[in-house]
Image 1 (cartoon, rainbow, N blue to C red):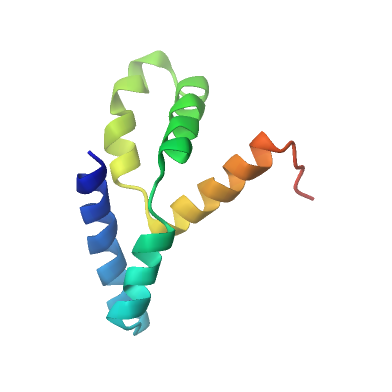
Image 2: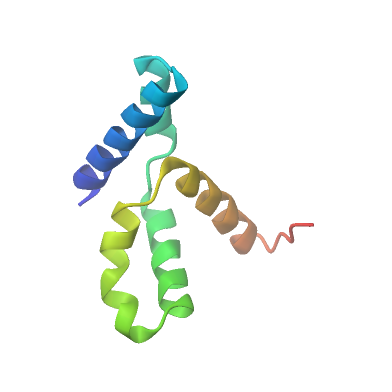
Length: 89
């Protein structure tokens, strides 16, 4: 599953890099630094279950496989804030 996700992120990264005029090296940096790790995936699953109706729980894998790099970055910050009881002003 992680390899499939990494491939999807790689495709998304390549598209973003082309649109923004980035080089392949900077696209690889995005892949290396914004990969969904086990901790983030677990946190997203917990939030998905608590925030969505039970009939939608089965769609988690589909949803998480389609999130973008900017969403991964945002969710990572949100997870950090949630775990450290940080309030955003």
